[in-house]
Amino acid sequence: MQRPKRLTFPLLVKSISEEGSVGIAQASLVHDDEKLTQRVEFIHRQNKTTAIAEQYIKGREIYVSLIGNQNIQTYSPWELVMEKLPEGSENIATLKVKWDPAYQERVGLATRAAELAPEQHKTLERLSKRIYRYLFLSGYARLDYRMTEEGQFYLLEANPNPQIAHDEDFADSAAHSGVPYDQLLQKIMTVGLNYQGSGQVT
Image 1: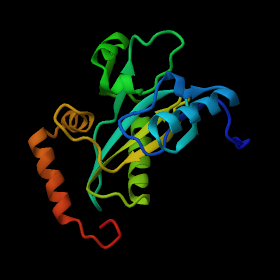
Image 2 (image 1 turned 180 degrees about the vertical axis):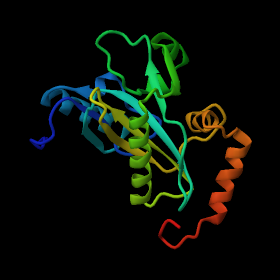
Image 3 (image 1 turned 90 degrees about the horizontal axis):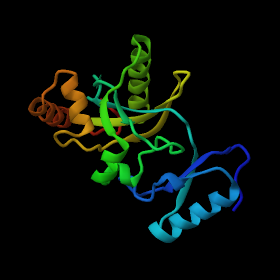
């Protein structure tokens, strides 16, 4: 396996198609070509899918929930934190972080409104709306970012169909912005009915 020279370590290796952090662990973060090859082979063997390797960005994990078609609204930026993460472990949303209650308690997992400076909040809001339009997203979506110590935002992925169940991040973010759950569901239905499927966001 030949690694492109511009792809520098550390790298995060994961399945290109799995959801819910399936196949992601602390071992997914690799620091040399040998470990990269081993992890790619693990994904092929364990998940039976193609693997993707992306440059790891150290920092805070922040989610932005958006709703709308032409008139886009952002809800409060939301952050995933692990307050008791063991020394040497990285802030990665692994399979255990997502689905193992005992592990969640052990690492002090919490999601909450992200504490950002006013200018950072404005920057993130503008950036998120631009990305939403650029990707022709509609209805509602969630954008996942890394924020570096220097305050730079990097988009990790766009989720056009995020979990909207009660007490999940999208609903919690909306509630923090003053939109109770019943109103959120009504708004989602309204923007869906008003969408004009012309291949463009309207």
